[in-house]
Length: 407
Image (cartoon, rainbow, N blue to C red; front, side):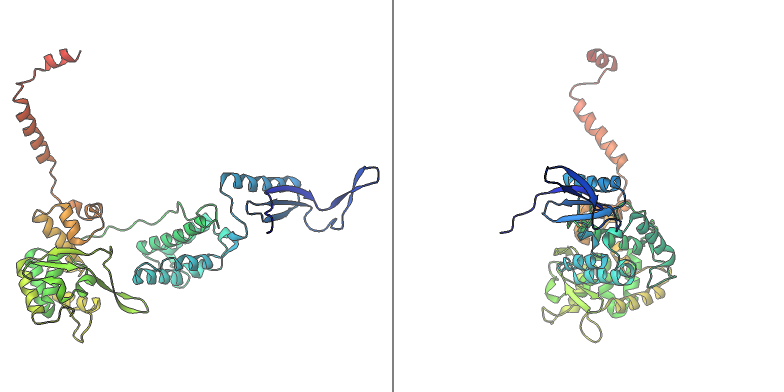
């Protein structure tokens, strides 16, 4: 077994060598490398027993470099210089291979962002050469000029943020793998997301759009009253619908994956949920599923198979135009409509969270908190009433007596 070399280091003069005579006296003489290349060479053996060396013209520079390497090993910030030479493209490929457990659409999104935006600029750049200032200039430029592949077309603030998030994730992976001492993507200034207006339909508007949607009437009402994501509704099977119990079991979703097509998988949060259905919608659902196999899709394309988002949007947008007065309302706004109508009906935040399938109540409040009634005055009144009931047993308080007792 090969013995591991101990960590050590030093600076040597390559241009001279020391000779010793028979009496033990020493003297320095020019070496064979005299006048060739850098005079001073700093060398050290790392904690893994591997030797590293670098040449310098001045001894002070060699010593400063060696001191820094030793200091980094002591503080735990040292990285193998050979590892930091790996290109960003190679590290990104390694990082992407760890995401196989993610949803196919998510992985496809990573690949698309890498191929079209990130790799054209950074693929062949060694990790150690990716600098904070160059990243900042590049990120800022994406909003103005777009990526290398799509030059002249500025990216949206959302897309720029997604790009930074991906680059930061690759760099974080490199740091954890000891390829870099720190993440150069940390602290990058990003564009602000524009305020997007959430549109909500009233009960009357929702029913009008549903009727105008023709054969998709039941789907539109289901999205507006039950809060399902479109992919969840498209993957809904007859066996998931309990007409008598006015319940739907949401346990799968279908999505369009780049270069693959429609793929069925779990819900966005990988959790099934049960939602209630208004009786009027339940009766319509019953007409959709009567005498059909339990594994059949509730809503199908005219050609059979999954109903696509494009097909539903086309029908919905035409219905919006027919109804009038609600221009700009999107199919996804039916999900916002469900939240709005549920809150108006008195649902608390936990009920809305479960209805929409949000991961946490915090997310629900972030998106729909402004719709909940402001109960500050009601809380103050309730506290005052409770205090009055409790204090009635001890009689009125005299402020002078209270102040005297407190002294």
